[in-house]
Length: 305
Image (cartoon, rainbow, N blue to C red; front, side, top):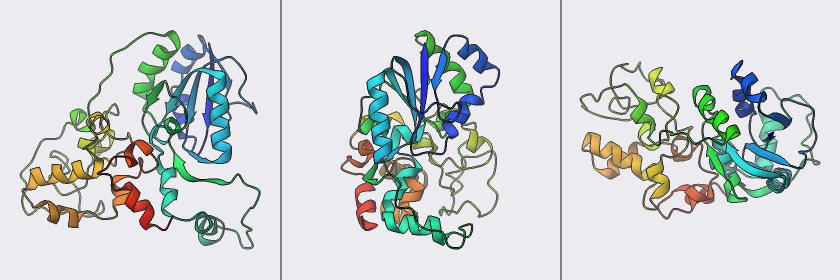
């Protein structure tokens, strides 16, 4: 069994999550050879005859697209690995600004930029938008997560290598959360830095924007468990993916309306910075953008692209 791990527009965190398997990784490599992975080994190009290719990161520039299409030709099975590959991830947020503005910020605008930095002209050109891997090539399996969690990988990776079928949860983060519904009084939306959440009760009922009800699970609700609201890094829940009339934004608004009995318009006024609070991991996905009720298209257009 020959395995490849490709890095596109991402942070390499998904590949590191494989290394975080520690000794369990030895059992994996006893059955398979990692023949290509820019983070792990010095291999410049994926070889022919790959059995399983894991692609991490979004497709943001011409080199990303060329490498993806080459890997698709050379691999029997292609896996979109991590939320950037599945839904465009945080790289998709780059569509909210123009390329020249992004480069100007990175090379001149941030505090860590060296004096005299020159914006490079020899880097691969940006595509007109960010893409999820499945927007451009056929994907055989999707593994979400930013990055995919170790406990989940311990289940799924051996099954992929051996060809075994296993039963996996298809529920949302809320289904894995141990919090209880609390009383909702004088509800208003809080920023994360406001106060300290009660550890026992639902974060959303306390006014914190927790996306657990609209986010795919398999993370054991690790953020809510540690008193941090879910910010949607596993991508949309299956009911949102399956139903064209459901979207992350509109389902969160309805969820809050149901909890608080506030009018929908009042709830919408409470929600701030929709691109970064509702779509930070999915704004680069054509699947999510093409929903008629999605706000992604208007957000990108409104940013001046």
